[in-house]
Image 1 (cartoon, rainbow, N blue to C red):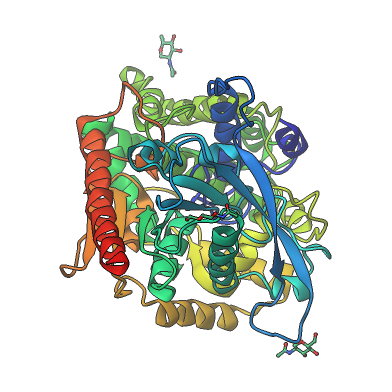
Image 2 (cartoon, helix red, strand yellow):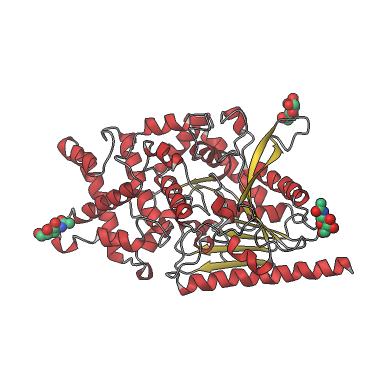
Length: 518
Ligand SMILES: *[C@@H]1O[C@H](CO)[C@@H](O)[C@H](O)[C@H]1NC(C)=O
Ligand SMILES: *[C@@H]1O[C@H](CO)[C@@H](O)[C@H](O)[C@H]1NC(C)=O
Ligand SMILES: *[C@@H]1O[C@H](CO)[C@@H](O)[C@H](O)[C@H]1NC(C)=O
């Protein structure tokens, strides 16, 4: 809980979805969602049964470190850093067995990455060695020298992929893995994109990849996010309804009305929403509205996942609770309750909506303080992906705050990166990886149609060499989570398809092993 305690007094609610669960991370800058994700991951880790080890057994998982070049693209730069990995070899029966390489994303990679959920749950069937590789610059894999801008030049998905390639070779030597063993990459969210790209760029090293909820298309203005949120709030299968969506809109309108009313009304709003400081500045009001959007977005993105304080059903229940009173403020009171529920589950006394404080925190270059990776991920959004969630179109049910300028301003304020350089970087990312038509073979893309990120992923196979699966009513990275009795039939079916796809690939690998031995 150490990280969490450290985080507790930091800015809590802010816009920024792709948030991370223990197995699947991702997010926009400093966000409520990142806080929530860390929290959920810790809950899941502490509640998982410990492995029963026989006498003389070695503890699982093992943690190890690889020395990696800081700049893999410049042979005359000899600086290096230590990259952390986790190993679970309890199912690995033969050196010819497959290796499941679980890639970390934009947060620290927990031991849970090789203990539960997929890929680990899939390992016994094929006697696979499971290895989790933390992403450079996150968790404990931060290069010496911290997070200043000169150093962050070595943080990008391309650097991370170079690490995957060299780790793949080094680990094969270290564990004496047979040269004919197939290596399969797994990952969720941004790390899912990395898994797909690892196969795309290094097909001689990576036999196949399973990419969960992978937003392979970079986009500056991610307005589709809130369109999916809006649609999901109306879906009866999730516990939503058109009335729920309307109540969400009404609640936001009421928050705005109270913000603009000023005086005692605004002070009361501050107390009711648990804000740490006054909401007089326009920029802080925008932060508040962004955070409330993230709260609703989080209920959709993480719908029905273990440990989540609010699902769509729970949120809609609160928003519609006072419906019979026919009072204009009933939905507002529901939203207020929702804020309290989330605040309580995060163990926070109040929530900071101070823009100045957010900027100050993002400027901290000490990696101890920046433990959750907000600064690093902001850098990657500014230099590669964008992913800025906005609410400007008529289909967005929330307050229409112009979010893009303020997001771009953050790149400028924190890193000195101009808006035009961000625009250019996003376009370059898509031309380098191919966006939603990467042309990779032996990659399975899995998404849930509740998850707002699925619109940036691949949900339909464009040819016989591509596989894609869109799981109805599933949220972000849900396929990777451990099985639960409450899992929907479509989720179970989805997990079965992943198993079958692996079966097909591993048979293919076996056939080529046999051929090369003959
Ligand atoms: C490569 O590394 C050397 C040694 O650190 C450095 O002098 C040089 O500027 C680097 N080249 C590039 C293109 O970064
Ligand atoms: C590595 O594995 C091969 C079989 O694949 C075996 O012959 C060899 O002895 C092993 N080497 C070590 C150092 O374990
Ligand atoms: C609705 O009205 C009832 C009875 O008047 C009251 O007890 C309740 O608190 C009201 N609920 C809301 C959300 O205003």
